[in-house]
Image (tube, rainbow over all chains, first blue to last red; front, side, top):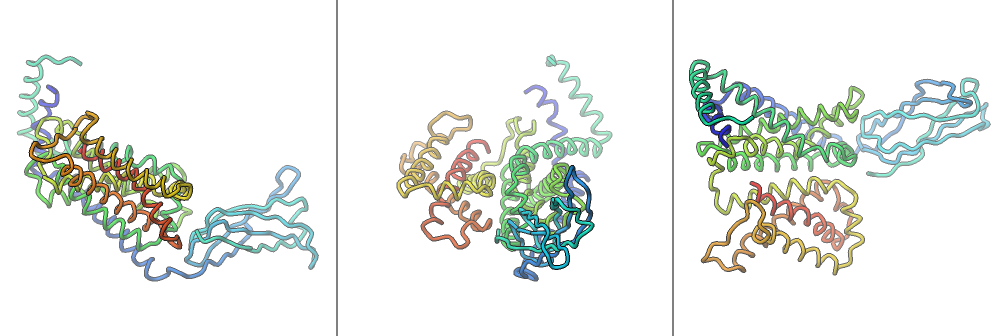
Length: 139
Length: 294
């Protein structure tokens, strides 16, 4: 309590004349809040319900133990967020399906990219890879 | 760490002498300490939500305009808190607005930093993810920052205290407490699960328990900050005026939160009522606790 008494004059003055740091931080706060609101309103009004559209591209193919892993980037070009997105990858020899692998992505937000991978027994570098989104849930 | 009275008196004189010469520097330093404390408060209040997966997801996929509404609703609440808790009776509305913006800045900077450290935000994330996640987390963080700025500082213990705000201030604190605790619980899926498991009798029991606890918290169980009933006011009067109205406020806020988070979308009216009552429980406790603490 006594120590608090000693601090008192300083604390008082801090209130009496607004310190520069307070103005700076306050300015940052105004800027951030208004910018966030503007961005969110813009997003909310312009592209609310463009259906999710998934495209996938192979990033890398690497051996993983006695298997092969195909790393993929999954992009949702729509504005709707998709959850539980099921994506399958097929290894094709001509038209014949050699092997299939499936992965599940928790969330792929609109205009966003997620990464994942598929494991295969066969070497994908010797075959054709086709990646297809199969289904999703609305979050 | 034991100081004698003379020692303290001496140091106070030295401090006053120094601070007259470097007045503004001293004020800046005192304020920097206040800001550091506000960061601490923001962390304390937002940590449970920073570490909740549903909050990151909600920040990205919840309806954008409802998130805006939540932010717009939060701001006057912050201003009101700053106004009523300002430890100088001279705190003007403008000071309070500035304090609220400072709290927003601190909470946003803090939550963004922590989310980056957690790997929940990074260069690979889109603007939608950044802005959505940070703005949602800022709500609880800024309440924490504001309380720490004004309430938990040493100045708050000097007997200067907060202004006497009357009934309106009490409702205000209740709303802030309800908002804070319901923000903590609303994003979890357990709210829906509990609502689903409850029979109408369970729901009714929860309403009574909420009301009873709200009243007991503030008037009966001897917590610090307990309220005394004025002599001319009857028990029923006090119960209706504060506890019942406070509960209505808590229920309204919990319904608003649920709607903002999309918990009501496509849900039958009966279940909506159940969900509201379930979230109304923490909201009611938050409201009662805020009356004690603030």
